[in-house]
Amino acid sequence: MTSLAVGVDIGGTGIKGAIVDVASGALTTDRIKKATPEGGKPQDITAVVKEIIGELAPADDVPVGVCFPAIVRDGKTMSAANVSKKWIGFEAEALFEKELGRSIHFVNDADAAGFAEQQFGAAKGKDGLVIVTTLGTGIGTALINDGVLIVNSELGHLEIEGHDAESRASFAAKERDDLSWKHWAKRLQKYYSTLEALLSPELFVVGGGVSKQYEEFLPLLDLQAEIIPATLRNNAGIIGAATLAARSVSA
Image (cartoon, one colour):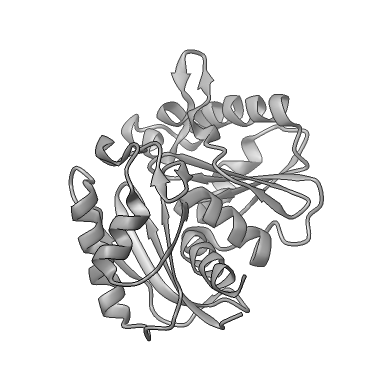
């Protein structure tokens, strides 16, 4: 397997990219971050990704992985979380490959983050069902069972008490409603308790930028399963997308 790959992580508010050593999961360049264009339309987002890859300037033979906040099926985005609804049913991978002038590996953003945590982070070597969640603009989820990634889980959109879960329990919801850590933890408790009742995981891993402040809210949660912070945090999507791209080339 090639040792270097590019990872690009597209989110509702920011787009990040770096070159990754896929043997170790370490970034070999500084992370480049740019704002997600207002409205999140396909051509606008693609243009920003092209800028980031241009600044990273990888060799032509370096694999490129792109992760995106949507269900991804055969290169199509089948949903759209915190981006334009124009992505729904859209041939996204084909557009990126056309605009970038190279093949890419295209994957759901939470799946990329979960895969990275399983390979290099908090979920490494864990048996049974692990649920990796990313708390940010929305809530992303990845299911990993005995080391195998189960794609497109999208459990941030569970309906709980009549609400889309991420609309109440994401970090963006905490900021929007100006919640204290204690009050936000009450919403998180409902969310994680619902996941636990449905799926009985062995472990929850909590990622996203807010995970670096895990001591403010994780100790407030009462669950049967262990719940721990992610170790790769906001780099997980980049690392996972790059590693999956390298593996797809070697397969």
